[in-house]
Length: 259
Image (cartoon, rainbow, N blue to C red; front, side, top):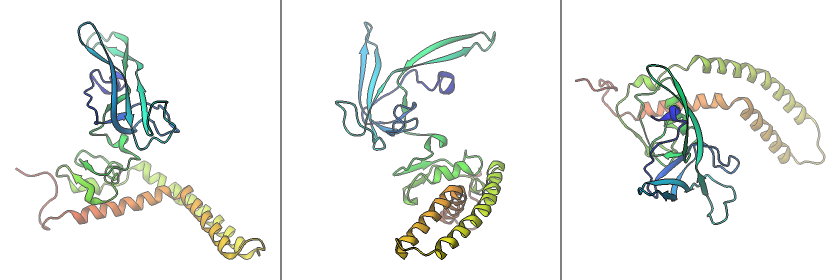
């Protein structure tokens, strides 16, 4: 059993010093140690019972994303991770009787691979992606945009070309319409404000300072309502670049191999 049925706490965890691990709990959100943070296993501490079984008690993880002040005795970027207790409900498959049990485990898991949702917001030095199992247009964009350049991107296997030509979901189309209406209304207000600012004489600021302030207002306006619109454009360019990099004769179909 694994996943949500065990509150995402593994029963047995293979750990090797130096392996990548992912936090499954918010330890220090302001400091960067949050659910989904990936780091390197630095040390572990466990106890041994009378039968020689080892039980993991705590570990230290190092992550470059952690910026908070470390605990005494730890280095910069180190996270001390301790056991937590999660209660889960198990239901018998036949008589449907339920019992509640508690599991004590470290809130970490191996991070050699990740789901699309857990990878959101990450910037990776390299990545191997599997596009064949994607649904919609959001998952391919998240997977393909985790690296800074395509030389660091590797596609695991053949995939249907429609995976990167998928029509945006209904929720995204509605959001685009909402943003377009909001942008039209806000754009008019911003334009009028810019005209007033440019026509008003200023004795305390030079023209370069006024230009900088205008640029800052435009940037703030752009980020306030246009972020998702830019994501849509970036996604279009990204998919176009991927299609252009598929090196094959024109008559060859990109997809599953036919037997």
